[in-house]
Length: 543
Image (cartoon, rainbow, N blue to C red; front, top):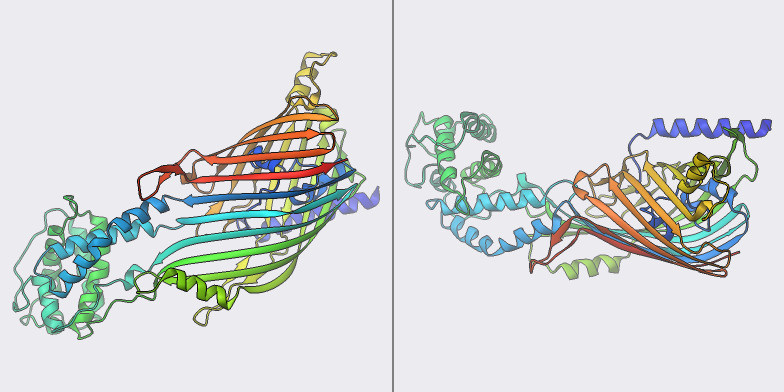
């Protein structure tokens, strides 16, 4: 018993150290197995089959015996209205040519500002943090015998997102007299050396001052009149008011350009026009306007052991500990497609695949604990920690730079219970029409805020699930499952609803599950579909 207490102290100390050392950073806690997936994605205190080591290593102590099977699963997600915004940007495609033609011919027509303002709005909308596509795929073989289990699984993630460095998106390639172009931009006439006093009506004085400040910053101490060829004494202040007035006239879609759009347009236009006035008429940087596709395939071989004897008792029920050693082999790929360059995205992907993914390997450690009060209280509680040593993998080198994928440690707590058992105990019922495990509920919560392969998109799930065992006989069972999952880290994700079905015939088990969100997005034809959808399948034998 002394050894068990030492084990408990070591486990508790390690949990505290890791939680303090890596607050709020993790890799997404994987949902493995159709049973747990159908129960909202909860399994830390409810999964005691061949998948136990992947959810909570200590759970293997609760169900000695043999189990083995195949699992596959997929979940696709469109985050934060990404597809809607891409469609809006695609609808703007015809205006790109108009914008180029108007800018090349000068700035006397305020239509140029209308198109530029609209472009900025669309790029801002599609460039929001955490916005993109995310696909997670799992598959593998899992076997358990008594207190041991071994598994070989593949965990793959694919992501796509845009990154527009708007400060580099100025006003395109322009030929001609830079000073004349600058005067036309500000005053509306390339031959004018004076600025007519104008007063914008739609914008605050603070916004006009901001334009003046940006103009002075771009001049970097140089005299405004000298750089643009205006009469001596012409000030940046008068130019700022005229710029605001001209941008105000460049409303788009019949709407007034807001302060926010004006700020963005001026932030991009002003440095560009100053550069052109100095004589550099090629101010458009395409290198930082990208669609980035990433793929990470992690092959994981895991050996799990759960200590068969409880380390201590709490409220008359035992606490078990378990651990898993993982060997991880990673294959990572990354494609950076330049959106505004005349290249085929298919060729870019093909070239990247020809070079091959970057391969590397690592070891990781998982730990778990479970309080098994199912017999005494109809309740069970678990704690699971994965990737405690933070293994990392490298993406292929692009333009001399190498990015890393780090699997940060992740922690999840879970509870499961049997409501009928509670009812029988409260009502002091001796005769039980249904077995206590006819209805099981499960609740999981991520203690860490988890990162995904999609930059700036995090997960921290609260998962709730139910299982109803209709026949509940040793040789036959028909299980119905339903659950709910919400992402506390991303409020715009909405609610995820799950359903599942389990069929047991003697020792053969077939499990199916599906996931769907309550939020919708649309395709180019206007058809709506869920932002998240997925499913899982299990085929197993249990003795």
